[in-house]
Image 1 (cartoon, rainbow, N blue to C red):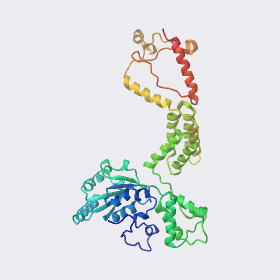
Image 2: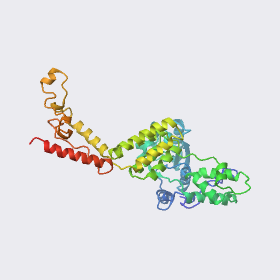
Image 3: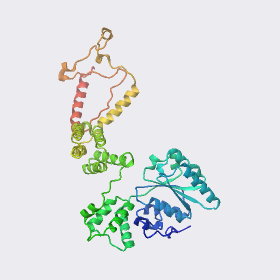
Image 4: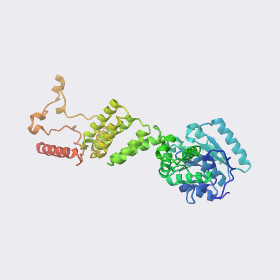
Length: 436
């Protein structure tokens, strides 16, 4: 078994290969940004130290080292490395891989099967791995950028450990720049501010960063670039965001909870993250409308009005002018007093309605449009509130078989404080006028 920190036996990379390939780590110790996994106390470090590798799923953003770690893992524990891509492979390819792995197993060689983009395989194809993983024909290492909880079969997940790779931080990306400069013997043609801008543009993706570095080295520049010059030379990186994937749900959750936590700055940041990444503005507006009803409610009834006005404004103006109305609604919701009393009341009332079934309302508050209905007591003794003192009769409106319930409990925040006073006043009158 090779040591975790020893060089591997991977053959040299040609001098004319892309920079990212020439800088690819040749030992696990050279992998940057993933010490929580590859270090001596990390899950991968412990596996290698023990010389036993279990099936794993590497989950992380693009350009964080999933493929590299898998290849180095095979070398570190002395296994045969067999890579396939779920994008280009089918059932026939898998059958060949498993057959070859069985042949090698008879000769005492263990196979590490690396499956890139494993989430691309459908459920039936994923099930096809199970018998070969269980009998030890292969040790599976799958790589995915998508949340395994949503994309992989439960049966497959139960047989593999999910390890999470982190997006590369500024320190890890800086190490890659230092290595590129050391390999080429040339400093990057950037001033300090442009160097920081280049790191930020990578958005945690080491492969993307090195591709941008290779572009910079391929151009003869008379002087180092500043941030404006760098922006003009390199294409702007589009934020990683899939509108039907986990990133979509993560950001809308972050926006909703920032609004609920009354942090307008954070809420505006997540709103910007979504809209600049191409999220549908009307989707965001629908969520703001929902938030206004669920988390603000009658503490500030204008919140719902603001959100619906923002929807009308956006539909009238379009982008980008209409996005300012979305910003206004977002900030209004973030800074409004909060109450989920209406939302809680709704859930309680719905539950009570399901439990009590079809109880008849009291006859005195039922209309009597026919002679028969009037003759059996519909509408009898109804007290018209506008004829009563204070426009309040204090009558009973609950089914006879049911005690009056309390679903809505207004808070002392915002407009609800006034509602609470009004409800207390009516309850006092109701108690005074209730028959003794």
